[in-house]
Image (cartoon, rainbow, N blue to C red; front, side, top):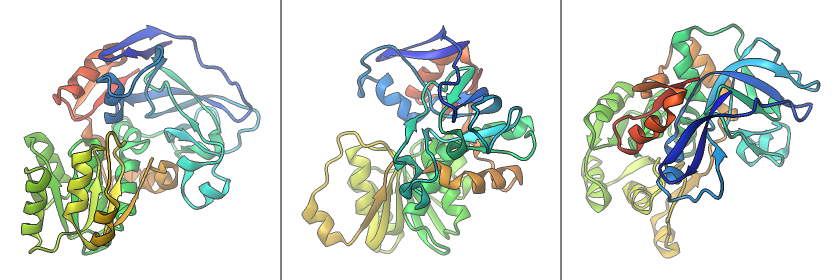
Length: 338
């Protein structure tokens, strides 16, 4: 089969790889209908996160069940299924509290930029649709496997409530779908922080009421100005840099909530500063599996169209071009056709 392999900074290749096999009785093999490049994939692509050896890459996926391990009960061969980037048993104490990405038996689902994928712990990881979805729904179902689930967790972790004022730091796919999620959870005012016309347009389509182009202290000042000096009730940090984290905390009102779902790189926090702000912090790897049933239902009922974040589509063999397009911000998110 064909699949993406990352060798190091700015070096991703489409290569011939061995077909995945059932290794454990709880495994499933999926024939992928679509996959994509994630913003978090750009950290190793840029050389910020080191790659020790050539590694099959990708963690967002949806597709048709090809093979089923003998102990799998929840999905059947021929069904369409969506899963999370972390496999989970969905039965351990952490899973039962809704934190499947902290499952006691979690496993990273890697190598998803490919034609086929082995998914471990399938019963606790995959959610099958009742019927085969239409081709038009595939991009949105793919988004549910990570960026939509992450955006939804960002809104949930930031305690977005009906009538709230929300600020979203980051205009990548996660930030844009954080806007969509905040809208779905009833936010009245959603301030999207973006400097890019195409992303601003999509943010407004997803529910943003205001756009702030300033960053850092200037961005905080602008949000304070828009909220009459109070700050936002909920702030979604969807980048992972030191500047974006401090911008998020600074934009939040006392007693408000900041979620952080961008993978942190170089982030440092000052305890005394946090102490006097009365800001709640909650974040981490999104427990996508918690939200998948709800998100799949909203997508198949055409209540939401998160697949609009895929503004570019390429064949899998052009995966290197896909990485470059996202790295150079020529694309919000690239869908890869296996």
